[in-house]
Length: 184
Image (cartoon, rainbow, N blue to C red; front, side):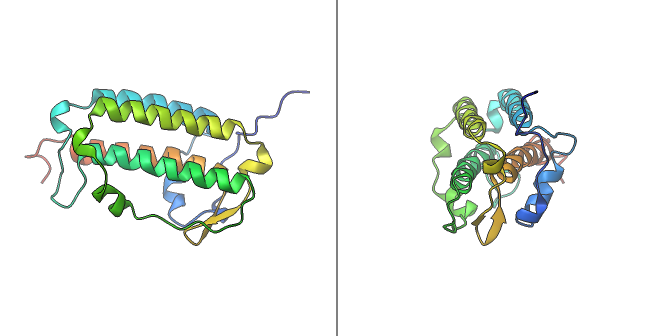
């Protein structure tokens, strides 16, 4: 009998916060969570490595994050989603509070970071996500928990991780890597 791949399966929006639909849409055409996580890691590492160093602290508007801040944001968000996925997979029914991404960005240390440093941290965090999910069976992947007053599952969180990074890489391409004269 062939071995079942627990990781084949799209996210279930019925057990996801409303914002998740947008991130799920970024991953359309993929149906294997493990392959999606790996492919996204490979693409994101190449993308970060290609960023020009002179854009590290670039902001396209005064109230927006620096380019390094965007990268750190998707790294930190993935760490938080890992924690949620672990708790949900273990059938922990304790509701998890949300987090304020703006607060996190005000209290990080991106001034002391480089693209290279952030790229290596992203690799570590994504490999940890892959390891976490590898240890889950189908029941664990689809176990429902609550965070920020919304239901979610580890499988959904994995797909959100992928879609969230794709979203922010697209924002970087569209808003951070344009000539200032062309931006407006």
